[in-house]
Image (cartoon, rainbow, N blue to C red; front, side):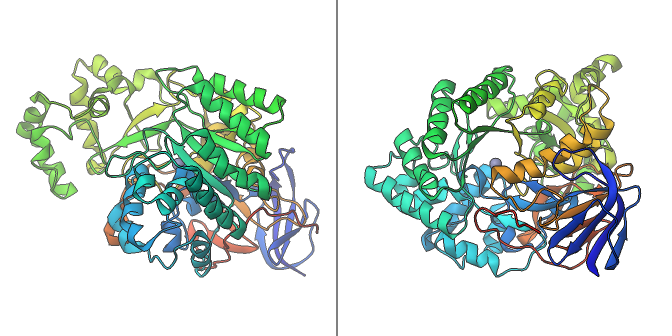
Length: 572
Ligand SMILES: [Zn+2]
């Protein structure tokens, strides 16, 4: 008698192999048979006509704070994710000296746009060292498995204090002390070390993440620990300036340590073919025996502009600022007043920064997101194009669109990966054998970005709905978001439906699968706001053999654990 049998589903096992119809049997937290007709079970799930896949493994999230108070990790859990890796991009909450708590919160708030008030109320700080942080995470029941990485920003401030926080160069003694901290984190079970080398990532005080300018001796001096221990991934977000130097040290790092290094790889409008050079560099590194892994996104990195989000085209207008503090419904009522509308549209505005000006005026790149959301809109549906056809100003069109859905409509500004106004570049990245899907940033960028739904989007858009270019095969896509992401982090026990593997399984109605538009909610601690996005069509998510979500509702089962280090594939 099995504990659980998922019967008669269309099994896409995560290996990339062709789908087949059959049963998946589960005993305890492990899969015991796949594809054959399984015997009786204490619980049976009728999966005829439904997809049966491994649970998604999302390797790029920022749930470091949320994981200490939220057992579910929404929104990722609503999208069939059963394993998350957090602590990316050099930011996190351990190690933490008692007098650095507010500073670490400011760093996370600045870099990842997670409300500081929510973090201040939510975090309990029952730890100082990284191992103590993992222990604290472990005391809490949870629905998903979580894996943590040691963030350079926290380590540098811990070891170097003010000098570290202010990005002063590290001495040999500093580097040695940081290496000790990282070693103790990795030995306790951290799955990687992460850093930030981009000017886009700044603390609330404007200072780039500690470590942003770290020299190669610091990066290698710390990173060598991964090589000595033979485990862990080095993750970074980099501006790649200068590109050649950055790629060269990454290759040297991996060749010397034998450990993989993974960096954010996205298309930007200033140098729209750089991504191809990055993929080529990964190939050259691979030929030389190094593992330099471009981490890619399945859709553009985009800002969502709306009356409840952090930015929209009229945020700097005096006529808007006067009513900006009002509750949404009241603001919408005022904005609908023709006199208010005329005043705001006629105002001349001085922008505080080039970025603010761009966000307020990039109408050729700004689109109505719609319901269901359209992430690959054609140039003819830009606000500039709509305005041209209607003989209106783009500002007028944007203004009126923002008031749709009672002021909850969102405008879509794809900043990266959309230079060609379609997804052909993303398709090439997705198809590249060395690239790995990440960058969904679950738990972060609460006021402007919401891409934690990426696993669902892979199925709805890339497998099923894409109209403006080729779609991608189901088996290929499932492999990319399960087995492939798991293997980068040496999680050999998951991402695959096979005997002996962790019983992390999704049962999905692909025909009914639907991505809702993102929405703003105020459910973080201290009523902090965040964008969330829901899905319909996940019939079941099974984690370690227990049904944790059923038709979008949590069952209350909390079998998730803190992952400690690499996981071996068990044999059945
Ligand atoms: Zn990140």
